[in-house]
Image 1 (spheres, rainbow, N blue to C red):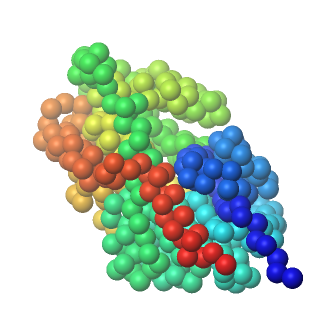
Image 2: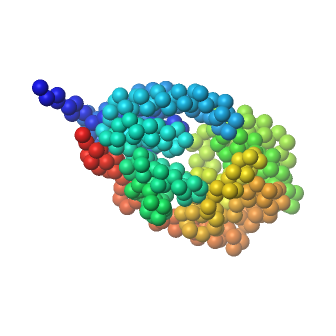
Image 3: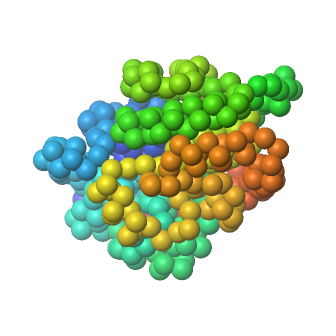
Length: 392
């Protein structure tokens, strides 16, 4: 007697960081709009995905591990969670496995799932930065990923050149948030007013805050000593507030600390310039139209590894999307108070450096456009097409 297949489509999602949790929940929302009650979600996610109906295998906080030493220490636990997730995917036998960012965890799961059940289609939402380092990963991914959803417009071409799996540009979630990043008329007056508001963004992890705050404080002290007037704002999140307050105790100029996402966006809307740690925040600042200086310091071992691995002229996302190195970056020994203060002085005033950034940032809307479809809708289109191909 033939068994009837459960008509419900089953999607297994894995997101282990807050940013991935937000992407996963937006994707789930669109898939539910398309499939109604005919879809079931299982997997690993955070609070936002839980609100969309995901029951997570384990709390994603169990994987909030930063730093090489911490990873080594937690390795038995990480390997146990990988095994647990692989077992859950193969037992569920979903119509699609969607892995979201966090490649150190999600790709290990996907490789093992492919080995156990090659019939499960795998979609990778958020490309690893193989255009920056370890380009050989593209060909390796061909063995266990059916489609990559890229957040940056140059990524599909990179996958084509590197011989990786098909990649579609679906758009960065920031392009759906422009209204909360850009000033209204009153906020624009403050952005253009005196003294200029200068944002300081040392990072979103405790290790980054530790590496950057002392250097940033020294640079801002030099800027003040040179007679440059500015109003300093330091946006951070509640769980990092204590580390930030401890880190600025010795600063010669004290910032106004703003806590939480809404306050952070409000600060972006009135900022005239920024000093930021390299990372996704550079794209957020650029889309906000805020000229910036960027810096990055890591431990000696990590610096040694990165120097030998990085294959791009800039690690600044906004520079890579624009196709020009318009934003100055000061890495490791170049990250000095003197150099940072000099560059900040330029972006705070109407100089060629500032003007070049403003003009380049104005092109981002066109460069990152996804037409009339949102990133989550485009992502759902690919997931549904991949599910249909892989339907068993």
